[in-house]
Length: 197
Image 1 (cartoon, rainbow, N blue to C red):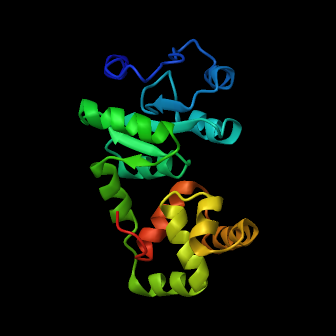
Image 2 (image 1 turned 60 degrees about the vertical axis):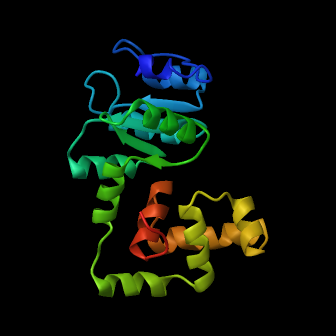
């Protein structure tokens, strides 16, 4: 990974994690825009560490680069709020694209991960209908924008509403759908047919 990142001179590595390091202290000390991690690499970073970053360093976006093939594990990690997940068989340019996208606050998932998200989101039709009726038309519109990564301000401009109203609608969506992480906006939007994976 260090070699790949070195191919792009616009990227700077703030620190590398070793088994002896206090992981969270490093993150809080350097306050990086991006953390690249493999939760399957024993002795370095695990799922609990990633959850700690999400809670204590929300300014640091997380990109997972892993060879994990366990679908349940992958979905568990996505629910932690990571903004990107790619596999280790991705090419150099895709890795760099993912790093730049997630580092700037966007979302990036390789095709394999998108397929897992899509497959996990297929639910029986009656449940889909219940999910749709839970949300108002305006909330459905907002959910679609949130799934696309829109900020409160941008969503307000798009829907011609005040940021305060957007905030209220977002709270209702979170409560009705039991949203726990940003990734779940995407999962629910796919479930309801608002966006395509």
